[in-house]
Length: 623
Image (tube, one colour):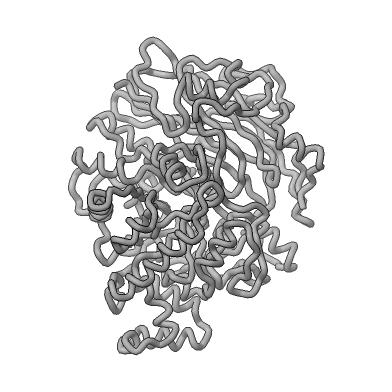
């Protein structure tokens, strides 16, 4: 348990004023201290909803191979806050329920694993399936999973993974389960799946999420990698669905860090140069990016952002998904969100459309059926590494070239959505307009507005002023005239997590000569720290006790807020701005394992972390 008094918890919930002094450096606009209570007005979103847009159950081939034996019922019940029993027999529940869930099982091989496990006569005709069945019988599910992923990645799977006879009853059960657990106003169960595009082991996965109910979603089987590995073909499939049914659907890419430079390329999969049609399609179908999850954080990388002291957070930069190819520095610019946002500005300047105009979410990509990104309740990537004394040094994935271990996975993340109500339509619409943010597991509340006339007094009425005088995260500012943009930011700590270190605004822009730049600005921070000679706010410190996994929130702030003016603004240049909120250091899941199980881990294993949140950007365009 962390050291957090009942009095402090009370103040956290009512958003008391923090201890920030009013004196500030020139680049920091200080807010006046006011209550952050948000007045409901004019139908603006006043509540943030928490969820996971990327969860796998035993229906996914790899999840089943890794040992998952619980399914959609347990997944929904767990997300709703009920106690369930995990595959390995551990009773568990969330400390707080989620508001929504997308069970996004892999479309390829839907219905295949149960047949493999049961020794289905049709599958046993193939030597590789027979081998896997024998290995499963011998308890070697983890080895089966790694072999399965490798064969799928390299296109050597024994049979086609889009078999309609296998998929149809499984898709029917997916839709029916979502309909069963969807409770408008209380809990939203989206219908969805994961399209698992792999090109020579390079990850191009997308999660597909329907706004629709089951009557429409049931009419078309999910698109598969077997159908095509080209995202353009996926978009064509989604367009055909919408045209035929009148429904609505979107796709969320993830893990560009495992694409070896392919996620945010500057040419199509077929090798053609981008044209206007491609740019518009990508912007339409992919309004969000899953910026953080168990397989690494994808906001920034220190090679790309050497002046950002917080860029080196849980990066996975070893290779592609099956480590069939190791990473090179040249690949990184086309893998990370911040760099992709900058590349998008280049195309906006030269071709009029930004293909990488995406908002941010986090999600788990858990294959255990348990949607948790809580470090003190982390069930790992898959069921073979659920909580135990030994799990930390299990091999997650390996090849002849390298290996990734379980301790390198992270308890991340959650999707936060500002919406009017907890329904499929309201949440999906908010995702489409990018009024979202992602966190690495914390449930901090973050608001971000951009406009031309905000002042510190607008913090008195954050919501009404934010919307009436500007745009929220995910919005656009245009035609500056003779004005300079102002941004209003607010963050409230998660009362179950670390207090707040600082709020930052990350700006990216495209210069007249085509060069791309970025800068990170500290907007507000806890305590009385001053900007040093290098233009940096000093470290907040580290209060984590490694002997008992506690920490002291006194070094951070309950809330942070402010109005920031971009003094370097050039109205002729395309730009984006997003907020990054950093918490004080807290225990990582590995430390909780050390304390709970008496595990001894190697010195390279990280024991603490600085959790964070990333908002969707606000874009500025001269036109």
